[in-house]
Length: 440
Length: 181
Image (cartoon, rainbow over all chains, first blue to last red; front, top):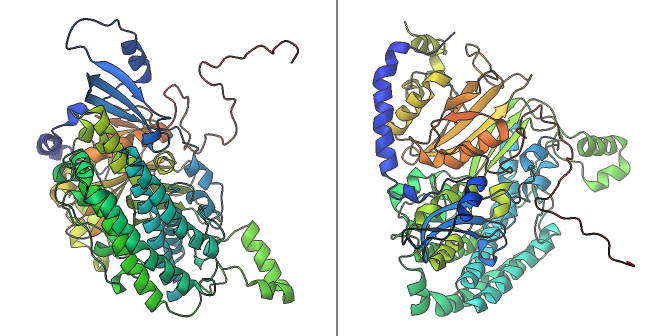
């Protein structure tokens, strides 16, 4: 049966053309997007230098450039010091993690996805777990929900602190790098205490979290929260109020609201243009309904706004974490659904059935009902989505991660257009891509 | 009676959804998730209707290769094809997401590109092309994005074997062993 009706096509073709001009008009700088293959770029590079003033130069930046945050490579077309067109080239970290996910059980899945956005691994685990739980249809005990919320907010703090460090380093405030790492290390130490690992925790799993918080965790978190505010004030002195810092960032890499929307930008990039869109507030998940916090919104869409948004998001996350400490419910830290939850260690010693159950879960995994689902959460970089298709077996038939860094990269040529090479570094830094998530 | 109204009438009365009916394509809603099933030939028209209806942003474009599997939750009146392109949209006003699932046959894996309607789909469609070999007609630069440009095959297809391949680095040169080493 065909769903197509031919007579309907002609007015709709007109509609498409209207939409075409309207939507692309939102991107006045789209000519700055360089679309050139490697082969063609090599040919262009071999052309002789002419005396013609109009001749531009192709230059390669990265993938091993210190300010490209890993392995981002930029193909730049330069007119003197000015960037005319640019093309982000990615794929250097591509290891086929979506293909790998098809060979791992749902229990092994978080170990795989946690390695994608390595600066905020808990978010990857969370979105994967939420998607699996949505397919199975299990309820998570309140304590697990609040532990997840507290841990991801701490992770957001760590991720934004890392941004503070690299943002400073990229722009020549090298001492800032040391400060940012120093504070982030304190958060990672807490993660190590709770999960056993500094990064790639595999802590949030379908059904709850891997372990309860250790004794005395409240004091550790309170110590963290007391340590941070004076340090953030140091950042304010070192950067926010500094004329050199402001001159370097203000008005550089400006993104308009229309561009941000048309290019599917999410996260601090979108909020810097004045759109108040934060999934924690607008489409709440976990228990964000029950905590009090503000969404930080910019107004100019420049690099300084993005810096300030992230700095203040650290403060908002601290507010959420403090409320988590106060309101943390007692009870189970994982669902008591025998299907997905392995039996407790003590039961294995005394019950043969528990031992069999333990082995079944860790070798065969558990079956997830047939279906497909998309879940999105607010990661430090924007909307992190997970699309899972289950065919009813113990492994996902297809697992796709919508990486915010990957989609956000598209704005780079627009933001770099007609700027200086030195400002291109500012743009890369303020987009804050994590290449593990871009390439997956 | 057009095919669309026929498809809409096939939905049981209690699940009729005003908000999803207006696009004139089969739909389903389970829980908070809304799914529409436009036909491939109607895809761009549907996308224009979505844009005009306040779905601000195309969040995600991906695909699934159902080589010999049954498609989950596919309405019975839609002929299943090997590939399925899945696009996710979001609306700020409604605070909702909408998912479109489009069947793409193996014999002719092409579909219209969203680029002119939702320019943010640029990289996402390039990724789908790279990983599944689905062509997006009208895309300004449909080239590989994650795999090397001269790569053969499309890795996320189900008939693409998982395994190791010999890697030869470009411009690599084997130095002859040093004397006496």
